[in-house]
Image: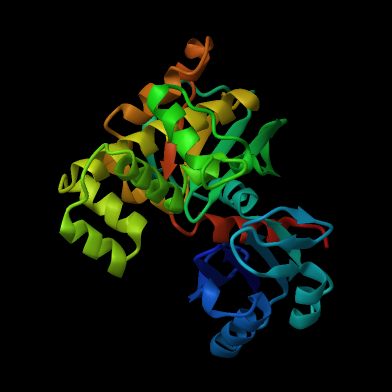
Length: 323
């Protein structure tokens, strides 16, 4: 039995897998309703009545010496403490985007939506970018015939505008943040920030029904839904800006690590706004970054549709790790 976990700011997904990566048991928990991962593990183990022989967890945040202070949760996740709780010699602890990267190899063609076929480079690196509760980024280093995932914290690099409107957005963000990073615009809360910018700078009016919906439901989900259904012009513009910034940041990541082997767009938001990602705006922004347009045009770009990719990746990591 392999115990795998995907720990995010909104929810924590746990599952038991066989060596063949078949799901034996799985459960999802609202992260903020629990004091820590240990509490959730205790409940999951009790419910499943299974005992792990190996375990690994992907967590949203930088991992150092087997320990992580979660970025969007008041948790500290410690691999030594988890190993003790699970009665195991060791437990794998990796960044959540690193787990996503490990999971890509376990996916099937139907788990992807193609944004750009491109021309895959058999000697090129790969990259993963995922907007959700936060913004995660990871690389896939070409090693022989395979790709070796590695973590990074590119989501907390500075937001770089590419036009006058985005420059104004950056100035707006400076009124709330000492250092506006790209996660402040490219995440669920980031979409809300873009919408607020448009509203607060007089670029549209918020209908009363929209105000009510945002008060009673997740604001970002409400904005996204209103945009996709064409019900609120300001929401439509917010999502348009969001998608353009997404394409630009994906290209920035691709260039920084020469991800000519492919860019994978993951996270919880992308599948929900897939029609908007497929209408050409994302790839237009992706291709028009700097002087290396020809390089970017040839990079395959795919959206990950399988929401269990990080879980699969953690399971792969646990299965293959040496101790």
